[in-house]
Length: 107
Image (cartoon, rainbow, N blue to C red; front, top):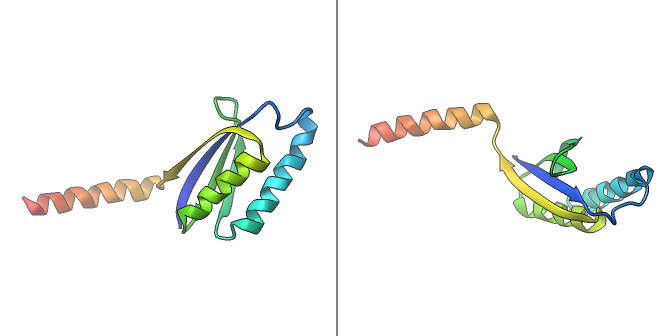
C-alpha cells in the first residue's frame, strides 16, 4: 500500500464553537469509511501551523485518496487541502542505493 499525507485547513464556517468540531470529524470519518473502503487511516494530528490537521493514510488506489480528500473538503468544510505521496525513510534510502548501483552498472 502507498502512504499519503493529507494536510487540511478549516474554513471559518467549519464550526461556530470548537466543541462542535467532533460532530464534523465524525461525519467526515463516517463518509470516508462508507465511500472509500480502500483507504486505511493510520494517524491524525492537530497542528498549529498553516494547516490545522495532518492525516496519514494508506491506499492501493490514489483515486480513493482523491475521493477521501474531496469528502474532507466538502463535509469538513475545509478551505484548503494538500495531498502528498510519502515514502518510508528506509525504503527511500534503500531505493537511492539501488539506483546508484544500477547507474554504475550502465557506465
